[in-house]
Image 1 (cartoon, one colour):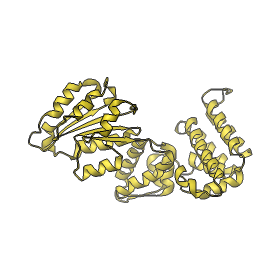
Image 2 (tube, rainbow, N blue to C red):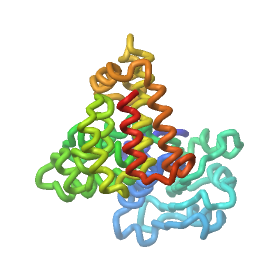
Image 3 (tube, rainbow, N blue to C red):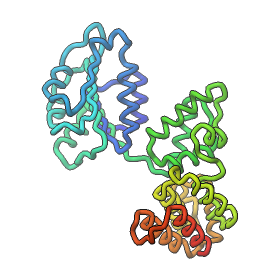
Image 4 (cartoon, helix red, strand yellow):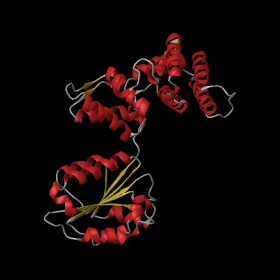
Length: 333
């Protein structure tokens, strides 16, 4: 039975369990949260001694996993077996066999990361349709949805984070939810006496400048603010390690790609806002005044910059000079 992350976590919190959890996702964070919850919250501490077993795929055989999963719990209602890095096992066919005669008093948790399952196989069809198996199958979160995820994450923890602060984190950390969660958990510890996160907190505790960052550079380019663009890329050039070319090109390409789609739906922009993850349409409406009909030229410039930053077709020019050249060319479009 296939379910999403929220459904599985909600059921676990309500005490609804399946004999087998097969956790496969393009987003490892979801797998970690679910497996950690099962490890930390289903058994009390003195029950874990005899009833919690953790294996690693490359170090254990299927026979041992099945044998451990079939044993009865000792002084507990549940016997929990967690297999981490299951993608390193030679095959997973044994799991579909076990699903047919699994123990109702056990929770077998399979963490299958960083590797896609072929959904055309008999194995996938068997486990995804089995009433004994709860399957997590979630795609990687779209970058346009990350800032909303950040706000929801903090709200659940009793914190408020401003939209600009969540967008800045999303711009810099991309859609690696595990990495973002680590930074947010640090902020929660630091700000526990004042559960409010703004741009100043991001600058002070995460190390991202609230004034001189890719997000602000993007906005200045969108408004063709030449002086501000110059100030920002000069500051970025001073700390090029924190602003690698691929990060810059990725952020700018993402913005102007969305702007192109936004332009194509200019008569009905509301139709694409959610799909593109656009939360502040005013910025895009304003940018169209400067780039309407020429966005494809900007995208070509960004692609050219990205190639040069990787040493393809460059004149042995440093990252700072390449960024400067890109910015001025975009301003001239």
